[in-house]
Length: 553
Image (cartoon, rainbow, N blue to C red; front, side, top):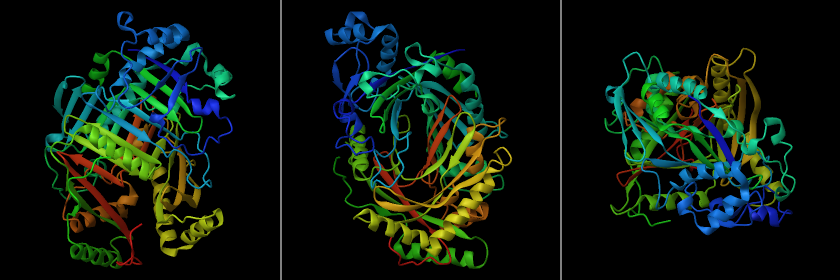
């Protein structure tokens, strides 16, 4: 059971033509709207767009003159990787995947010039080859394969959780994959092979950051399987999945810092992968979103929450509510993608995502600013608890720093952040190598697109006997979306929120790659669309110092 991994790298002409532009300078167009040039001898240029197809690649009888010219110019090794690109044509547009697709985005560039230029700032897009949906009723697993939704239905036994099943999949995937570096390069030579078209930039394989594997969301209600002593029931619809993960064996990635495209793929037998999974800008029709509870009821819940805190049952409670609206029944999937593009332009969040899973008509538009957990395949783990936000201040660098300092000095925001950071550090001890869990940064200020935020960083090294699923199961649901202590806070919130399911909101979203790495965000600032109904949830941390009249950020 061996599959191969290949990649091809594309470079933006704007990078080649204007080498004076800073890599972190914002572009006026989205990456998929920019012209691209293939690294090699060819000067053929093409526009990448979500609806673009690479028809005929790998089929001699149907190649166009331009495609034959391109393939002849790049050589056999690149020809192999270009054939892999054909499956990437199943993106939002006329040739999309029957099961769905996933976009994972980072912000294009720093918004103020004060943030560090992270090398991993990029976006990835994939079509879904297999989709696994997990239902609370009877612990049901529904597995579907593209393009005809064929698959199987099964039930987990009482002693097996969805986390157990996902952990087994994550353990097995690395055993049936093999990394093939691009253009027959070795790992050591890849860094030294430089192309004249890159202005000295080295061509590097995707490596640990390539998100090939499972992508999707793990909903808040999975806490019933990760919190051992959780007992209270939740009214969750039997036909709505608790979690959905799509297996993606292709990805197209745009690296904002280097202005490069990377196409990567896992070449494997569909039967092998399926066997592994089976066994182990339109106008809204609704002018307003209607809240699930009245304002008076929500204010009353805040009062009750502070009463629980005063009596010592919790230190902090993250109280949430949902707002719902409807789209016209004629709205199509492409229109939802257009809404996501509009959301990205309005708020280029660090952890944005567009997820479309067709079998259960689920579309997720996420503009999350919060990374939950990142696990490197080699063991390092990192989480970034964010507690404390303030509106972005427009002005010079000095005014921005002053606003950040004011947030950093706020006693309520400091107390919340320190408490959550300490709890997460404590939890990392349960799955990290002894002595490695540490707070690398405390109460740092990060200006992003629309807000200043108070961020801490906790790091550690995963124990060799564990994998990324173990870490996620031990940390879920996020402290920032529950409170502390976690179990008692969840039970109080169940009562205050009238047992209304949060669904994907307050859970996590991202990818778990075949090499053991993972990168998950907290699912907030997110819209979930099902059957032309959109649900957008919002909330805030309640402490004894909270003020009801405080405006939202």
